Length: 189
Image (tube, rainbow, N blue to C red; front, top):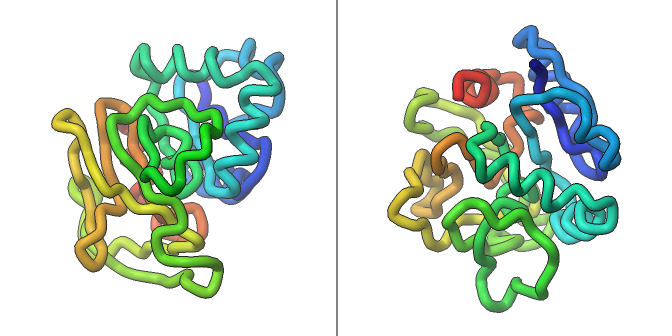
């Protein structure tokens, strides 16, 4: 089988590069027809969650992907991808934008401000290790996690990495750093 990378918008090429470094075959999901190709893992990249959600709905990809995720397909969701997975958005962020809504978390968009609020951190991630580099760009944060959601990492007290079953969501961009441990965890799910 293979890993599919949502390639409607955002940092998908960088994820493909990290997966290739690990020897994983990945292909791009750009249309509903691409869903007919066999794949058993999915990457939801960073980018603009509003744009990605609307395109998923317009291209009739939202429901088929939701069904696969709900059946247990492993997912790595980074930044905007985490927003797409979130069952709920903070009240001031929820504008009814289409989302997959498969992970029992509440997410606040742009939690650290606009582009100028971007930063880099190093922290421990449970099941990954210490000193994991984290690049935050207009990043969200998890403000509430359901009881089935495991908090994997915090930065400055904010939840920035979570896992629910085979869904792995992070508020940062691991594809922009050369540390492959998070992608390795994803491939092990």
